[in-house]
Image 1 (tube, rainbow, N blue to C red):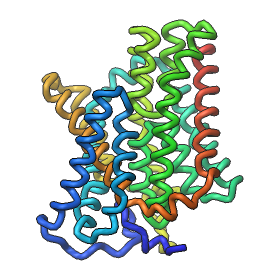
Image 2: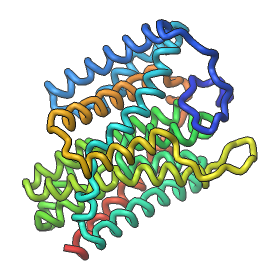
Image 3: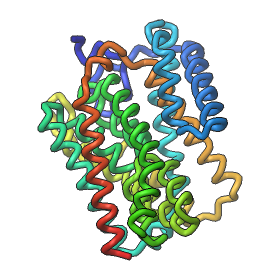
Image 4: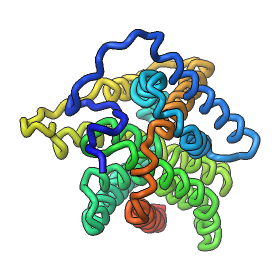
Length: 345
């Protein structure tokens, strides 16, 4: 088994790893081109076959995994999985406004926060019960609790490579994408079968489905009003990504044993700034749509690059236990979201 430092590197906000030597911009070219082509291919498949973009980007990236061993690809793939990821997280703030969150009402907002914490905690507890690390439980549970693959990438970036390696991240991305696609299909059927109202269904779907697109799609598949509620609830969960990342600096301090002050990474600050601007400044629709398109493209490219860089031998040897963490967290999120929908509306 290789040491954590031997795996391809992800972003490391705590400087647990020695920095890579400076590289010329042109060295990013080959890896960036491959990641971009993989993303475009994923977009084509997603558009023509109504498949989740994130899942397609990851699967195509894994299919190109053999390119990850080419040293010419390292710089560009690293840039895609680090820099593009961080800017993608910043641009996700363009989907959120303060007014949307306040409009939920205090009881709904409190329910969303409690569901998030309980789901994340379930991930940690189940991971520890199965002999896995708390960091992996945080990664898997947080991905379920917040916003799927986007949260998984952000959490892995904050935790650092020494705590969550590329194989574990790739496995969570596979599991979370599959779980989100499954939820998008089955959760609206559950809501219909038990006779939930539009508002109840919107809360249940928005508070339990993993990825943003799947949560919103499931809401609108129930009804237009359910789709509106699901969108606001889901975007509230997205907004909670920033404080969760900030708190991780307290629970997962730097690995050298030194105390770490509560600090906010620049991309988290950027997320808040963009969300605030989107709340108080009239943003032209074309600007908002462009920001969301860029965020989707950057995150999909980061996912594709992660798939290409993932050490497949370690990934294939992980077994079923890590996937059970995702399943357990998903079931807890669904049960609590269903209960909240019945109690609040």
